[in-house]
Image (cartoon, rainbow, N blue to C red):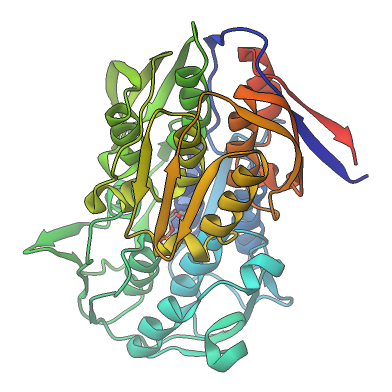
Length: 443
Ligand code: S3P
């Protein structure tokens, strides 16, 4: 049954503690590396969202057995088949809505001496794939696809790869990770130098599996070992900062709130939203800092504060790339002007996040001027709301609008919001637990 998400003004302050689910980026990588390792890997804190389940299913189709160790599918054992143990899939490999699954799998499949076809949903079929197809072609893989090999479905026949020195034009962790994963199967070294540093979960996780990754003069260097080993490797995945951000920002915006979010990943390459939100006047304290696996983790303690617009520094853009829909919502409810440039990548995410957020917030009464590579937003105390908006099947738009609605005069109906299950299946019940006003309703 089709449903819509209805969100309205919070009736009081947000309070309490919520453990948000595991990190999406790390969950993809954990399954991939575990599948390619020789032996069993246990993963805990796995995000059982649709995106990550797509990655697990893709490996199952190539002969990797995955045992779920609890009903929630947050704990699993992956029986790795080794770097050369995957077999040719009989059917097409479906990445669903998951850009990370698709782009990182291009790297893995480029290393396989067999034929595979990678597909996704309608949104993923619109997203640019040349950025990953081009480098693996340079390494020696055959990649054909729609629109001259630039869009899914892609047909890949890999094997016989040669390492490359690659300097991507876009700062993209997916591109970097694709090339590094292909590098596992290549002869010689593979090197990547990014225009700006992006999330480094791949580089941090590979050494857990015995594959070293070096840094040399701005180059990330992978010299492939003979195999990835899983000597009873255990990967524990921290809570996803990109999910925690929705509750942190909501608490920051609603007077009197105070919320605690334990064991969230605080990797510097993911904390752009915290830097920007703090510059806007947000109050987020980090406590109980520690290291989990190869990642820094801390509890976030958020208190409400008064917020104002800022000019976002270009250097903060890659570290906050997934949180701009949410930051736009916060900006629409802050004092003064918020300006973002240098974020054209937002136009090729699960939706065109500049256009879609501008439409949705403006429908609710905000003043958002979309720019080619960002937005200019003039904030106000409350949004009039009382409207229907379209999340265009983009999980982060749906959740960002649900947060914006907490300071709307009349409820906002969010259509095409079901995609929340791709990254944060329990978003609605956990948000309700903290005191946010939102619920699903039959369309
Ligand atoms: C991701 C990288 C980012 C991000 C995406 C997850 C990753 O994409 O937007 O949600 O896990 O590597 P780009 O690499 O396209 O910037």
